Image 1 (cartoon, rainbow, N blue to C red):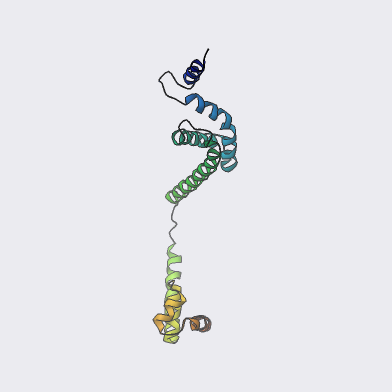
Image 2 (cartoon, one colour; image 1 turned 135 degrees about the vertical axis):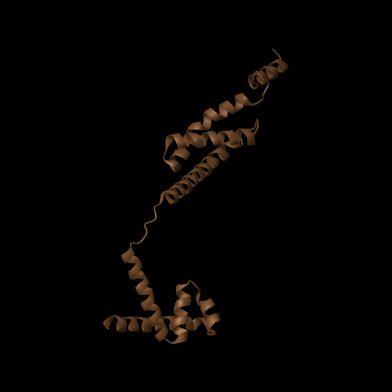
Length: 183
């Protein structure tokens, strides 16, 4: 048996009946690294079946990415297992959030709660009218979510003065609300 016969025999082992090269090498690579990939994915996901699904995705990607040269893929499949498992977890969380939002039942306030809330808003408006205009405006803008810089620009004051203005306005608002509730 010569060198040519050994080479031809090696090529036959590495080919499938369809003539696809590298399948035997991939199978050996798969058998060598499968348990490690599943163990890594299981450590992230915590579910054996999910880890096996991740391993399937990773090895399929490795087969496509490293055709015939699986020695380079050894480190790649480990990293890919962790990343794919993390992506699976993220997808699961997003899916859970969507399902939770879809099944959320909005609880409408009762008639009594609606009347109380309306009265509280009306009372707040009355008290805001009694505050200095700039203080009331600062409170309303902050409550609406504007930043200190935006409030300063709108009121024509320095941004450093907004905090003091808001603190004084809140104090004045509390005093007026207390006065309103006493009567």
